[in-house]
Amino acid sequence: MIILMKKGCSQQDIDGIVRLLKEHGLGANLSTGSQATIIGVLGDKAKLGDVNLELMDGVEKCVPIMRSYKLASREMTPEGRTVTVNGVVFGGKRLAMIAGPCAVESEEQVMAAAQGVKAAGGRLLRGGAYKPRTSPYAFQGMEDEGYRILRRVADALDMGVVSEIVSHDQIDVACRYCDMLQIGARNMQNFRLLREVGRSQKPVLLKRGIASTIEEWLDAAEYIMSEGNYNVVLCERGIRTFETATRNTLDVSAVPVVRERSCLPVIIDPSHAAGKASYVTPLALAGIAAGADGLIVEVHPEPRVAMSDAAQQLTTASYQALVRQVSAVAAAVGREV
Image (cartoon, rainbow, N blue to C red; front, side):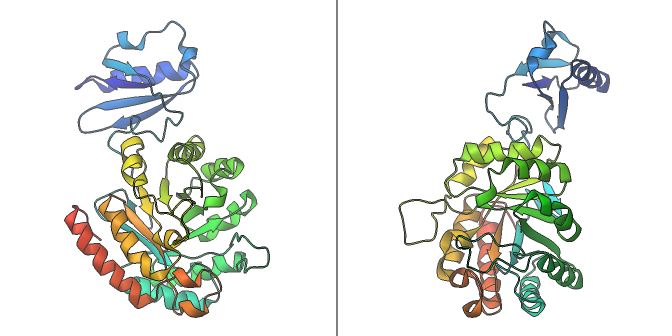
């Protein structure tokens, strides 16, 4: 339930509502916008018993939130949330651009990729230290050493680090080296991991599961937010369908749906959707045109010799060309890179 306060209500009115909720064992999420102040009620409203909140000073009306995800809902924060990572804002006018290699292979490889990303204006470096792969015989990543390499390169270039964690027992180590923790598609419904990441308070990039509905995706975000971590960014990376021409089917329609239903920023991963480098730029442009708040793209200095996902990784030159085209589309829809 949300409590819509009257325009011009006093701080004393707001404090009184928050105090009452806490006295009844309920939480309060305060959202102050340019048009109205909204108090989100966290917990079972049955605890209020016979209390009629609409009779309290300053209250305009109470509105139930029918969705299973409350904190992630647009109703809870009508003006939307922003998430800041290393000075990069997700959800603002400027698009957030994350790029780097699929997997960390060596410090030289990461540095070469990062320099190309930096030259294109990028400030967030992605790279897989732990690689959850379909085959147990495929390259699984450099693990903790991969995190350390990413941190050294990022520090040298004044960039932030975005990298995936695959288990709750990696969180402490990952938090020492990463500015944003990525939850991959395979772990979107790993609820213990989601809760632990929520307790970490680190910004989280939550990818959509390979066959998950939008509601399931937002419910997953709710697990993180329910632990007090509201710094969640959603990532549409393509879903599994009958089509085999691409690696996954990019659900561009998910962007406007999420923006309507949720207060969280949403970005696009065209690399995992495409599976082929030549498709990455067109999908990226489609995502930005649809209203995405940014992109996460795989970039490798020599994609042909990449140890994972070679076919879909861009060269640094190709990435810089992508950014130029994205800038044009962004300007057309009132955004900027």
